[in-house]
Amino acid sequence: MFERFTKDARAVVKGAVEQAEEAGARYVGADHLLLALIDREGSRASFALAALGLAERRDSVRAAVGEARRRAGLTQAETDALAGLGIDVTEIVARVEDVHGPGAMSRDGRSAGRWRSGHRPFTREAKDALAGSLRVATDRHDRHIGDEHLLLALTVRPGVPAEALADHGVTYESLTRVLYGDGEAKAG
Image 1 (tube, one colour):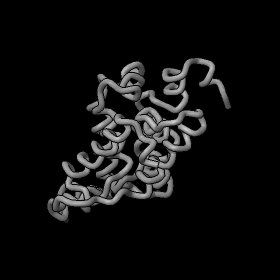
Image 2: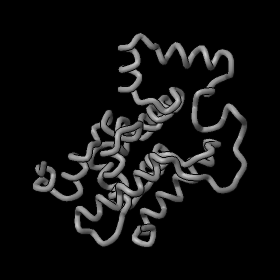
Image 3: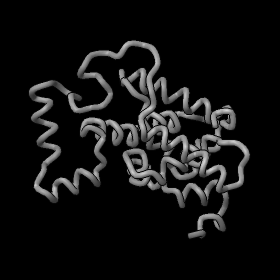
């Protein structure tokens, strides 16, 4: 599959690994793919994100991802569902952090000390996003997988990246409209 990745898509994967390293994470997650995508410039995905106004709100997306990490990767929707069952995730996070320090519930490994350099495996969510990019490209009859396909794949898979993007007005439909024109977004 990776032989079909364009230079920009490969740069996103490499950037995701760098994002994980900078965070001290033991794994490369779908959130790292998102952060690498929003850092890109001069690519199809960066064009689409800029057209949708996300270029000026990168810090807000980073903050949303960081907040989800503090909640052990739970989306706001999952947090709200748990609240409906009487479970206050904010209170749980606060109590855990009081005992174990800030970021203790984060999956980035900071609470366990910095992760050594070396190979970081991809999480199931990240692997699913990469596989999803192949499906998106195939569905579009594209021969190569570009960073735009990675971005589209992140919007359709439930999780923190899709939620953070949607909260900033970036959905599969809006991306499809920007990338491929109005006619493509009406399918469904």
